[in-house]
Length: 472
Image 1 (cartoon, rainbow, N blue to C red):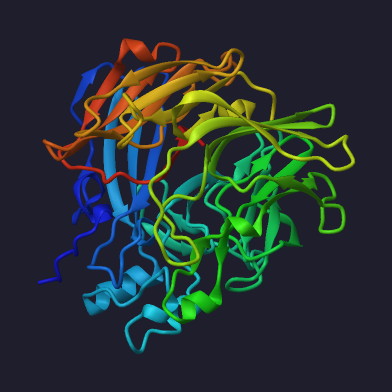
Image 2: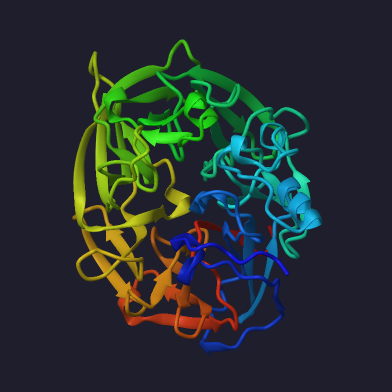
């Protein structure tokens, strides 16, 4: 019998891991699945298999990917653990022996594993590019799986060219097919740098540029526009010294300041990177960005400080809500500075845009939010109009029993107007301990779901998802 999970808010309720892999060829459906919606919708997140070592962090669970295959009005489902080196090792010994967040807290005999591991946890996101389904976790290289069966294939390193990790938020240029991504602490644990990589539409890694940062920092997401790559370095600092004495490897240190690296998209390198001043707030996720006449616009869900992490004294700070904010960076100025303005009064996270308008001026975004006064888990889906900062929202159910994860927008067709299509979201009902796939009309969220594909199991609240069009 395996050891029981310890008490931890990220191991209970909607976060609680599930212990089975399922395969359902056809799910029961309420409503009607649009016939022009064909492809696969993926969800990825942490699903720890064995009782974790030390204080469990939400980012430290074994990766589990969920796939909804949609074809001709029918929906199938399967979920699989991602069989990384850590997963296979602990599965073999039958217990948790690795602490992914702190290599100095591993069971005796496994101390070197974390430093040498290439697979990581594969628990955060996914991307479909150049015919490969890559499962992502920003501290390690991508992990490839079969896009249909979810069978684990192994770490993917672009034929040996990728020697760093890969962010969980790579960007695909809809016009060129180019994939752009980065890795922080790219030359070693807790180093002060990041490396930007570019992969062409055929899956060939074409360039890698390492850029030094003011200090070692966790960098979760970034922004790409037509002419720039924008990487924000916020003071969520990494420290080997802290880790070695059992303190938090990552902590919030606002006194270190914040700055933004603005890198030319063509020919960008360390020498021509410009560093822009910024207040020490924090962003996990960006909706989109674009540039026009030398002015860069960035939209993201901004926190007053980094949630889920302690300060440098080891003190956990209160939960804090993110708000959709718009940055303006005028690169025509001799000393540009980030000017940030909140554009939505309602807390929100996991922002998305119509992927056909990524890196370009755009009008529509999608996000998740809590209803009511803004406290609690996300139970609401929103469509945001950037033209007048208005929004339309749909509430799935009471926020104390109903939870939704990041929603994905799928265009109705390649040439449909911006924002015309479907929004796909996994919704969990805690009393029944089940989840369902909701398919919404992106232009009429208030009208409720077009279709609901019901599961008999629950999908733990996780992080990110993705879409693979049929025939790709």
